[in-house]
Image (tube, rainbow, N blue to C red; front, side, top):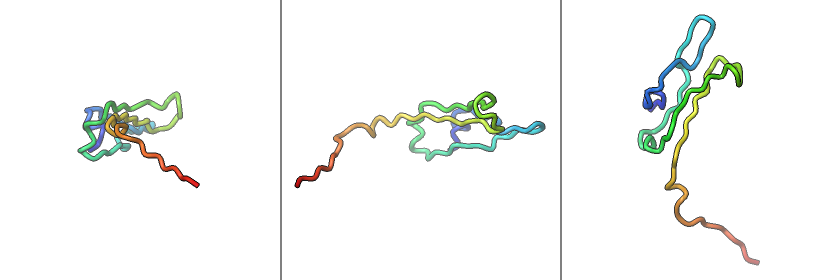
Length: 76
């Protein structure tokens, strides 16, 4: 799934002096969309002066941090 379309945030991500288009995407498999916490399209005019915008996604995979951490130790 295209995250911009999924979050109803579609907008042009590239521009020139005459044209603009949505040509940059972040794609995700549908089963992980429940872990998406936010999606933003950031203007780059002040940070990188690029003709492309910055796509930012944030995720929360809290289940990945649960459970025991395994440490491998060596004994001599």
